[in-house]
Amino acid sequence: MEEQRKHNDGKNKYSIIVPTYNERLNIALLVYLVFKHLPDVDFEMIIVDDGSPDGTQDVVKKLQEVYGEDRILLRARPKKLGLGTAYVHGLKHCSGNYVVIMDADLSHHPKYLPSFIKKQMETGASIVTGTRYVKGGGVHGWTLMRKLTSRGANVLAQTLLWPGVSDLTGSFRLYRKSVLEDVISSCVSKGYVFQMEMIVRASRKGYHIEEVPITFVDRVYGTSKLGGSEIVEYLKGLMYLLVTT
Ligand SMILES: Nc1nc2c(ncn2[C@@H]2O[C@H](COP(=O)(O)OP(=O)(O)O[C@H]3O[C@H](CO)[C@@H](O)[C@H](O)[C@@H]3O)[C@@H](O)[C@H]2O)c(=O)[nH]1
Image 1: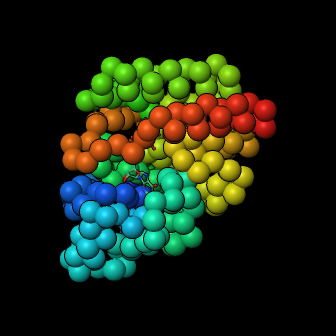
Image 2: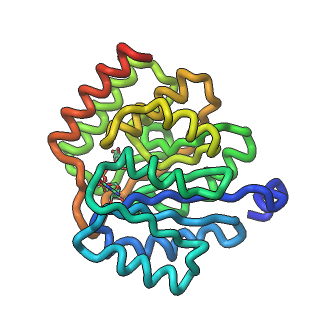
């Protein structure tokens, strides 16, 4: 972190976008861990909640009292509108020059954040993406079916699209804000396939992308919102990318 501060010169600010839907049991621990792992970093967290019926927003408001409304921003939408548009919505409210996107359920552990920042500073990359599919990365707690689905989705996309990135469907990423704005404006997907579209379009545009290994740990509280319809959307998205990129 000392090294990080040296290179930072107080200029870099990180906006961490966290989309939430029914994450009441996870969000406080996530916020605590982000603060713990980024003690000397200038950052804000933008929670994009889609009217979670479990009271996620009430917890976020309490967190704002503890950490400050300038560090924890709540940007709510009235109903569940999908992951892709949640990122777009969050991005509108970012004041940092770098943007991190991560899940609320601790499957993206905040302990990795310093390595994302370090990698970006060392390489000058426009995007640093977390990968489960290189040495040092992995998944923990998934059923065999979920592992096969994720692996299959990646292998299929790698074979068809050749993007030069090992994990296309993961969403734990750091972007230079201007790059995210550029790439996001050319994306059309709304659901989970958005992650793949983002990284493929960024790669096609020639942006410098680096990877850091992460272990994705399945959530302890709550349930995944990834259903059969998302898989159909993924396949449609893959075909769309095949013909448009
Ligand atoms: N605001 C908002 N948030 C949402 C929505 N759907 C899901 N989320 C939030 O998005 C995050 C990821 O949702 P999960 O439902 O936990 O995803 P997952 O099944 O664990 O999938 C993860 O792994 C996939 C790759 O294997 C990723 O593609 C996916 O983005 C995510 O990281 C969580 O913080 C969840 O609350 C939505 O419609 N709106």
